[in-house]
Amino acid sequence: MNRKSLLAILSILALAACKTGIDSETYVKYQTRGNEITNQAQSVLLANVGSAIQKGGPEYAVEFCNLEASGIVDSLNRVYECTISRVSQKNRNPENALKTQQDKAIWEIFAANTMVDTVVTSNKNLVYYKRINTAMPACLKCHGDEQSDINVATVNKLQKLYPADLATGYELNDFRGLWKVQFEM
Image 1 (spheres, rainbow, N blue to C red):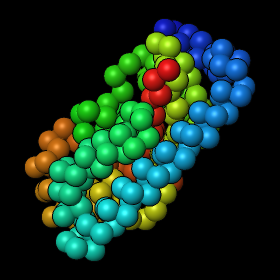
Image 2 (cartoon, helix red, strand yellow):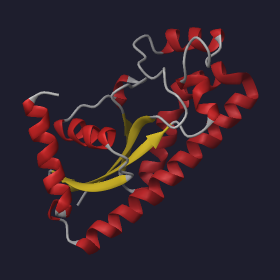
Image 3 (cartoon, rainbow, N blue to C red):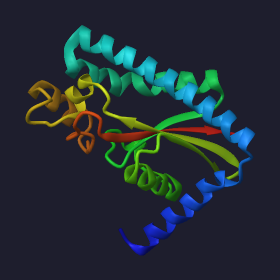
């Protein structure tokens, strides 16, 4: 890790220590709301992916996610009046890459410890981040080791739909990504 990255992480930690200038009542309110939203989003996505796996196996689920996951998240954005996304250093969809310095710094903090979630400010908005782990064996059917966990048909489908895929090679309970929920203030 270079000096610039270390300074960014220390700055974020210092901000987090004082809850980024957010009063404690607001922090708890948005932490609770962010947790509820991400739990709902995770539940809806997992239910749909589970149905897709039952219908046509993991390779069908990959195709389903490619076509439908963004639409599902967009519908939840409208319901909850926020912007829900997932970000990762090892993304499958290029739209889920770590794009901002804040995302990158928050990623480093989550990767360095077992922090579950946090709320930070960003351009006068509040942003909730929550850890995503490969929590179930079913996750490994698309995100595990390409030689032992993911079947050949699924690997082929991943290569076709996501030629720059970085989201494999995980083991059970590995840190895989972050939910990111932006609330406009």
